[in-house]
Image (tube, rainbow, N blue to C red; front, side, top):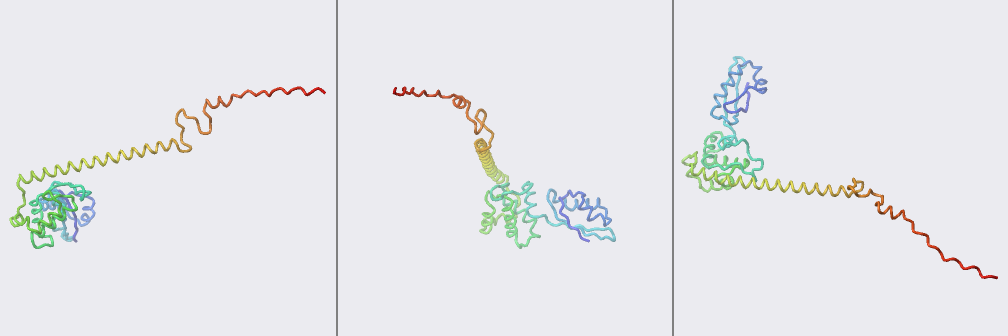
Length: 251
């Protein structure tokens, strides 16, 4: 029986999934995990697909390790925990072409490509959805440059490590990009907060003038006259005396 897992390279641990699928087969799980970790040690820090072929009669097994996904290998090389949630707007790293050539070499045998150059293009293409810059440019720009032969020298020589000077330049460029992104994020957050505050203020003003709203302190309740108005209303104007009628003419 064959069972597939995706494990952390060099650090597979026992868990419900492992126990549920392999426990009933009667094999030594502790020994199995130890063997898997030995076989995947070279991929430490990366998610690795494996397949375990178990013979239930003899209680023996064979472990086959497959190459990790390209994205996982890129994350490992660049020290990333995850890709960008907004790859077209938020950049999370700036890779050298040499680093990606190293990934392409490691993955070439499992990719549907015949040449290292073609494999490199697939690796660079993965950077698009991850939000990773390459040589301080977008991956799309780098793909065009690969086709035009800009990196033929690095590819033919199979360079997998950038020079220290080049790495420093790439890091400095990314530091500027990161700083600009943080400023834009902060400005957007402040604008949003100001907008919400303005809406809250408008709602408060509307609430004090709407029918049935709680009266403002000191203001007369609806339908009642102000105190001074009551006093004025209580005062009666003196009745005007009509001029006395002259006595009727004596007969």
